Length: 340
Image (cartoon, rainbow, N blue to C red; front, side):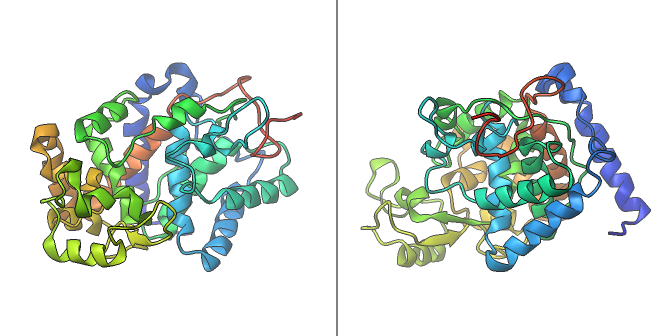
């Protein structure tokens, strides 16, 4: 795929800026990651991964958002080590069963297909953790978003962390609590607001925002920050009696739900942030929105600014506590540790 000199200069600048902050995200281990890690051992890595994702997208337009979300949910538990992909065993509870992932995290079959394709051409070489990182970048790019050089060289963890997955950032949490969770991994307010921009893709179940429509914080009233026309639209899709098993979905970005762009932030400015965590960045001053609201405005005004900040934040997030060198392993099957 041809790219002009100015685009490559931007990509390199993003990578350099992100690398400067890696010391806080894993020290010497993170610094061992590099974008050319598989150039000699698995030169078709990018093309193979992209092909499998494109094939999956043909039958499932939601898959790009789902693969991006898998990388988030993996990195925020144990670091970016592929622990989310492990199935439950008699001695280990799977992160897939934790409340933030159960009946919500999806795309595991596509990760399996990528791994199987890579095992045909470069067996035992590419880790599942790196597959998640690369699949996230390719998904963003295929949806029209920015490109960045993915740092590679992670190895796979040997265990899952169910309890850790229970504490993943939750869209119903207060803004200050969400910012605290991101800050624990060295992700600042700009990173937080940029990464929230991943909600420019995908959909959410009614249960994720039901309280905002009918009974915010036990008040028996809807969230006053919701645009009234949007509230009426959402109530039609999600009636008050909806159950947790209801399969109805709403677009996280009501304007361009399948395109990676900055319209998500314009929606937040109009009171059309679907999740509480979306709207709180602008409308919850008592929770620290004074710091995030100007960033929302910047990104709404400049897609280039958003893209640059998102790429920087993704590189930083992808370097949260990676396993490298002799740590962990390279799984042959992403669902189980080797030898199981």
